[in-house]
Image (cartoon, rainbow, N blue to C red; front, side, top):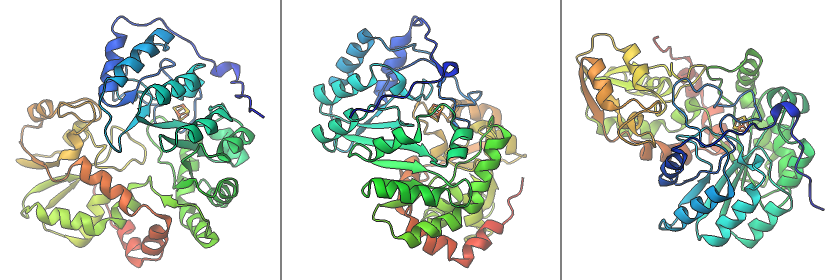
Length: 417
Ligand code: SF4
């Protein structure tokens, strides 16, 4: 039997605006970045309290308005003319110039997803908290094998925490129906307390032993309310015990732990060291980096250069990621340095033009920095992304992080502020 798409509570209903004059330009810019710019308008009505789109103060987002059938015809025609590249997935939704939203709230989303699969030969990655139609999503997965990479944001199946964090999300019973068919590729959910992530892992595995379990904890960012921040931090504390429970349960699903840079940096410490060595820096050279990379290099390459840990002040909260540093973050941290070495990944925002995630360009930074700026070309997004994936398995986290005394030492290294 088909599942009804849950009715969204009144205060989460959509408000549609007229199209601004240059909205097709926004659509084209997103499509050039391999995004399928279906839109429900700015600001997601689901209002999850942990949403990384809560604070937009650091970047301009444009408003293409609600996608019409005419817009969709234009989008589909534009995408069809683009070459199909092997292993390339188009992302369902623009998120570079537009705001990230749950696009399956658009009444035509399922129909247009089907159009995309039918009229192009391209693959698609979709993200949603679950507003897909069942059984249609499962039928599409069977009809177009290996074309849909469906990442379902479960977040948590714990009744109380789900209510607190995502009061307008689909019901647990609907989510179960989404999970138990072939449509979903991976399900992401997190630790918030004892017996949260571990219980969810077992529930999801029982429903679907093939779906990739993507786990970890959520990072509090600027703009989140106190309760959400508290829950995220509580989840970080219980992550090791939760991970162990899942490891011991030996579930048949592929199991990954990602999301937190401190884990990624430690598990990839040997590669970070090797990369650092190839840079051939000298003791006096000042090198910019996020806090976790600072800890790795302070442990294993002490005094080989002047390491400058830069907090992610723009994103705020507990964020700690070199790729997501902004030039403004670096400017706040500079203190009379004559030369500064900057990882290239900071200026590789998908917007292009050598700009950071907030849109500030290298040239603009150089004007303000009043020091010589050298770019470390080898520390680029391609390398960073690859590393992020390589050791992201639950088994690596359990064996080489939880069980490794060096990880405790790594966590204890003080980061100067
Ligand atoms: S559904 Fe996604 S985009 Fe919408 S509020 Fe929740 S996390 Fe944010």
